[in-house]
Every structure is written in structure tokens, then in C-alpha cells.
Amino acid sequence: MLPERLQKFEELILKGRESLLRSVLKIDSEIHALVDEKPMEFNERAVEEAAIQTLAGLDYRRRKELSEIEQALARISIGTYGICVGCGNDISEDRLMALPYTKICKFCARKDSHPGLEA
Image 1 (tube, rainbow, N blue to C red):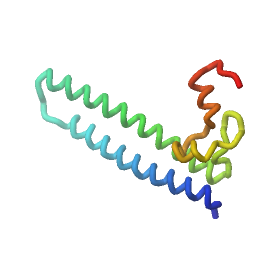
Image 2 (cartoon, helix red, strand yellow; image 1 turned 90 degrees about the vertical axis):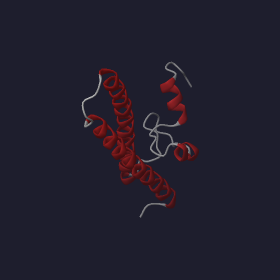
Image 3 (cartoon, rainbow, N blue to C red; image 1 turned 180 degrees about the horizontal axis):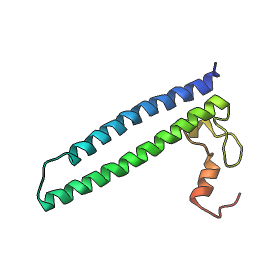
């Protein structure tokens, strides 16, 4: 049985995963619908290709986020959830509420976005 705090985050992560899975399925069906269209004029095809590329980019980001969610669920199961993989400190509850599948604390996230930042 998970402690109440972890159970809350696990439920939040699982809801996010469910939503993302629905989104990925919808994007996939939209891409397939565009690909399966009848022959069209060059201009129409160019617009369709742009739409497919946009959807594919969105699909990639959603799938990457799903991978991060699965990693967070694994961290919950092995007891390392909420511990920063960068510095080993606890990740704040506020940060986990905002981004439940994060694996780094605010400080390490800031360092990653601003290389050379020192303590």
C-alpha cells in the first residue's frame, strides 16, 4: 500500500496518462484520415502535408510525455518518486503538483535551462 501522499500523485499521474492516451489515439486517427484522402491538387496536398507534419510533431510530444509518465510510475513503485535525479534532494510538493512526472527539482531544472548557473 502506498503512503497517502504517493497515492495522490499516482492517481494524478494515471489521470494524465489516460488523457494523453486518448489524445494520441485521436491524433493517430486524424493523421490516418488525412493520409487516406483521395488524390488532390498540388496546393491541397501541400496544406495536407503541413497538417500531417503538425499532427506528427504533436504526436511525438504526447508520446514523449507518456514515456515520462511511465518512468514516474516506475519511480513510485521502486520508492524513488519525488527524489531529484540531478541532486538527490526532495522535489517540492508544489512542483510535483504542477508537473507530477518530473524527475528533477526546481534548482536542477533552472540549471538545465541555464547552463553555467551555480549554487
